[in-house]
Length: 256
Image 1 (cartoon, helix red, strand yellow):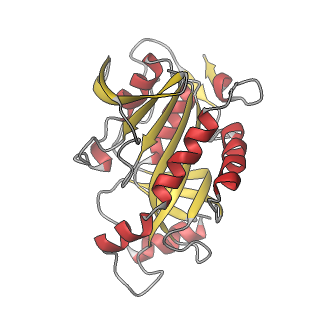
Image 2 (cartoon, one colour):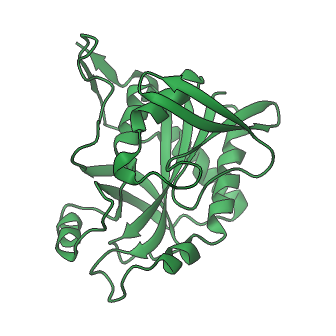
């Protein structure tokens, strides 16, 4: 099982039959779903749990990513519901995330916490995998799924939404979209030597960008059919042979 999809808000499973598998990790137990696609199995991990019962600040990110690692996963696509602070990206648009700004506060951010006497640092020159990004663009073109552009993801602690003044600050720092889950997920994937790419699904305008307040029905409507098409693109890429020969994802950790 070398390939996995992490589903964010609104993306809770794969079509077809799948089996449930529980994985014991040093950080806790994780439940994943394994579906057979052709000659191989694809792991699906619902980030918030099967019933979306875990808020973003309480997700056990280290357990989630370590579970994928123990299953042998090397390639990960992830979805993330995001708010837009960039007027070019409206609700319903897809944004390819290429960098992030971390404004989380209390969540564990690394596997290298010194507990085993090892000190490690991870290179974030390329926070996301350029190979998976390139392959996604090719498959999305065939599927007719439009990616509106690329952007910087601002990760906040949650679970509250951001204030208008905070959004103005993030805009000044170069942020395009905001969410509550991609850090430390992207960092942990890099520490484990995985190729990882997240696609932002714009569900709403950030606070203060438009006059309307954020509403649940807007989020549900914005996801629409895109979540199914997005999953099909992921699976199309996963049906091809992938390698780590043309990226630095598996050799980004510097041990001291």
